[in-house]
Each structure stands twice: as structure tokens, then as C-alpha cells.
Length: 623
Image (cartoon, rainbow, N blue to C red):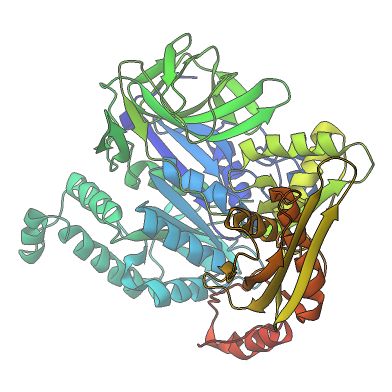
């Protein structure tokens, strides 16, 4: 594989709703560029990007997958991103390292939720986007309706740069809005259809205005009626795209490769190279700075994904931001302050690795067998004291308890799940110290189920999921008094302590409040802290089901002692006995956890959601 310099690289993520054809489009792009010699299919389990056994069986992408191709003397790195919302962390990682995104949406006649989320993620992160309306050949497809739904939401920033010519439900050609010329899908020039002339002229005028707005000189030429040169048009288009003022849109069909070469041309022509893009946030020698892609600076890169390959071992996917990395180079993990070495350097295409001699700034590749390096770490030349801002992955929102289907496999399952954490930064494994449950947490049930299936596939042990135990609390609803008496005589020195304690609801801090109301020395001063200590130990276990007791006020108002046998341990035990005696008489009850939830939905679903919340004993606080 030829080594490409920074200005000849395009890094693009394929994002959007699940099932819209992102993986099929990635396959078509690779095949059109002759990067693969056979066109695989997702439904047949033969696609390049979906190679995990769970991906093949479920026919959905689970992990982001890398691929690369050569087109028009440029290298295009493709990151195929899962559209299922349980794997949102993969899109977060991909958008952190690319300079552009292709948002794949189906010609369904509507704006899908995934398309909306993908567009908003690009806007939030400042990643230029191009929309590819896929599946125009499908029965009942509606390109016009899809375009109208998207522009109704996002306005005139979404403009077609190619308008499909559709006859008999299939694309037979397209009109290039930028040049106002029409072509068949085979590239033969034809007349612009009469029904599209006005639309194309209108869209062309809108694009020309956007170009003019990017530069004062271009604005002057626009008002003077002068034509822009091809270089001015490209510069203006790039400026509009980088400035979040323009999102180009085009259509095609991935499975038949219709207009896929056009998409590759547009990525090369319109999407920014790493040199065109804004810098990444980092700290150099402790100072916050923005670091732009620069091949002349010392080497630095960031790990954005880690996977375990059964043949190579651990692979770290990296984006080189400055300098270059060659096989055999030594460098430092600046996050862990450990030295590492590039023993093997790869380009990734699905599950295949191709050895490469070096990676330049702006390129994406993989390093194998690094000892101390994981996702989010910065690696750099030893002389370059840089640490890149970490990728902010979504926090887990759902937890389930995990156990072993067969006794004795618990340890293997836990170790397997812990290894899964390295591959997915939104997945967590921890033990709940209150309930004793081993909890796995993530963004959805499908993600957690898939993690357990992958543990079975990789480590041969079967995990089972269940609802976690709820960490309840206990409290009391009325006052009660009790005497705790601890007396122990077993020859020699004895133990003696008596306390009388009043328990009532309403601690000052909402948890536990101890009040010393002893008068006349009924309990000597040196033993009063022991009484409080005993009560603090006692409230850790409630009388109903052993959950911690909260919001309790305990008043020590009387007691007895022995001048010889009274000791601290005696008053600790006496306090616990008083607690166990009084609480059953104080009307104890359970407290459930309360969560505040914000739900965002279209108005038309308001009644259904409010009804569902009421069924779950939810309390609606406002709309």
C-alpha cells in the first residue's frame, strides 16, 4: 500500500439510523474503488465491515469498523459506525478522529430519528457532513419526501448537489447542480429533464450565494455578476462546509453501486483533508492549546478504539495528528508515562490487517501488542510533552445483574466481561457493595446481551442476566423507646452497661443524629461516645430486611453502669440491643430510590407516555 501524505487523505465516518445501509454503502465504496474484489452483502454475512459472529447473526453493526481505499490519487479512510443507539459510543469515537461524515438515510419520505441525531452530533462536534439518500431503487421509495422532511427541519443549509433522475422507480441519471449538467448513471451527458430545470437553477443559485458569503472578494464578484473560477468555487464550498453553513445532499443505491463513484468524487472534491480541519484540544507542558495536523512536528497520536484479535492480540486503532510513525519507532504513552515500541503497524480493512511501513499525520492505522496503552491514551515522541483531550463517551444508563449459567464459571465470566470493557468504553463492570450483585452497565439491553454472548463466543462460558437487587433504605415513622442491657459474667472481669434510648424520625442531616441527654452521670462521659458508635454500627442493618436505616434521631436519656465491670464494649453492645428492641415498635418502613427523568418526545405521544409513567407510579412534575 502506498504511503499517503496529509493533504491526500480523507477521513470519513458513515453514520445514521440503524438499517439505512451504512455497511452496504461502505462495501460498495470499497468495491467501486477495487479495494475489494467481491461485493459482499450484509444479509448473507459476507460484508467486509460486519465480521464479528454476533454482527453476522443479528445483521447489525456492533463495533465501528475501519476500511480504506484509493480514489483519484487520494486515500479515503472509512469508519463504518453502528446505527443502533445502544452503540452510540462508537459514533462518539469515530467523530472524534474524522474530518467529515456521510450521513446515510433511506428514501423513506421522512426524517428518521437516527438521521436527526447524526446531523445534530455533527453540528455539535463541528464535523462537516454530506447526506447520502440511499435505497432510491426500493419499492415505495420517496426521494422528494425525504429531501423535504430534512429541509423542513434544517432549512436551506441542506442543498442537493446532485439531483437524481428517477424513471420507473429507479435512478437512470442525475443532474449535477454545481455544473448544471445532466448525465446517465453510466456517465453519458444528456439534457436536463424539463421538470427539473427550475429546481436545479434554484439550488444552484442558493449554493452560489453560500460560496459568496464565505469571502469578501467572492461577495464582491457575486454582486458584480462575475462567474467564480473553479478554484474559487471549491474554496468557497469548502469554507461553507467547514463553517457549518452547507450540508451537501445526493442520492443513490448502495447495493447496485448507483452513484457510489459520484459519492467518492464528492468526498475527494468537497470534504476537508486533515490539513484543512480545525485543531484538536490538548495540553503541551501543562498549557491548554489547539494542535492542528502538522507533518513537520514531532510524532503524536491518540488511541480511539481497542479490540482483541484472536490472531494478533490486542489492536489499538490510532489517529496520527502530528509527525509520522514508522515501524520500529519508540515512543511514550504520555497518559500512563510508559515507554512503548511500534513493533507492528497496520492498515485495517474489516478483519484484515495489512502491514505498512509508516503513517503520516492525518492518517488512521493500528498498532499491535502495546503493553500499557488503551483507548483514549496519547502516544508521542519522548521529546513532545503533549496529552490530547480525552473522548467524552456517553455514560451508562442501564444496569443488570450478571451471573453464571453453570456453577463455578463466575470468575471466568467476570474476567471476560472486564476484557470487554477495553473494547467498549460505554460498558462497565462493577460490584454493588450493598447488594453483592455483579452489575454490568451500558446504553441498552441489546448491548448488555451482546456482551454476554461475546464472552461465551470468546471464552466458552455462559452468563445469565437478571434484574439487579434494589438498594432500598429503611426508616421509622413514629417514636419508640427501649432499654438495652448488656451483662456478661464469666469469671474475672465482667462487662456491664445499660442504656435507655429514644428513637424518632427526623435527623438533622437526613441520615443519623445522636443526642446526649444524660444528666446526673447515669452514663459516665467516657462511655457516651461508645453508645453513639454502637448505634452507628446498628443502623447499617434495618429490622425489616437488613437495608441501612436513615433519617433517624437517637436520644440517650438514661442508663446504668458498674464502677468495675463497665467498659466501652459493654455500652456498644447495649446500644445495639436498644436499637433492635425499639425499631420494630417505631413503625419501620421501606424507602425506594427516586429518580428524576426528563423525557423528550413529539407532542403526539404525550398522552401515551404520561399514561405509561402513571402505570409505573411516576409523578409528572410538568410538561
